Length: 143
Ligand code: THU
View 1 (cartoon, rainbow, N blue to C red):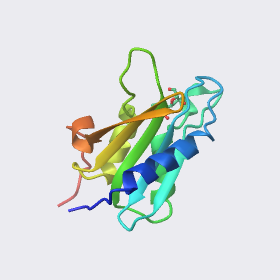
View 2 (view 1 turned 180 degrees about the horizontal axis):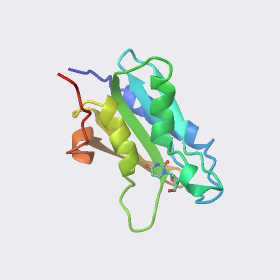
View 3 (view 1 turned 180 degrees about the vertical axis):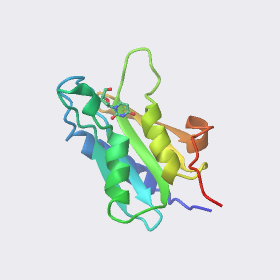
View 4 (view 1 turned 90 degrees about the vertical axis):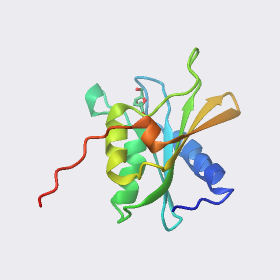
């Protein structure tokens, strides 16, 4: 059972929002920030980094997760995401590729905090990972 303190979601969202400031998104002008909370209480963040060869763009969620995994972390208590308000949309969900990558490391009940910035106002929605990714591709394990 993972426990998250009362202040951790806000701290995690603040880290995601700060990372978003470093977004390199000259093509889409869509800034995204993400942050993950490790099971031992550390926070790693990432932002989207685009490329003139568009397909080489890497999303904020994967950059945050890979920063954590690349320094030895494997278990996570929560993930937070901050994007900007898009007219007509309540919030932006992580893309399919990021959800599949998350499924490698996030347990089904892991909270995913999705925040939308509208000017200075930040509105947050919380989903369990399994709601966002009910049927992930699962890795083949040899018996
Ligand atoms: N993007 C993310 O960083 N995360 C997502 O889950 C979806 C999209 C980025 C990629 C690209 O830089 C920009 O948002 C527009 O698609």
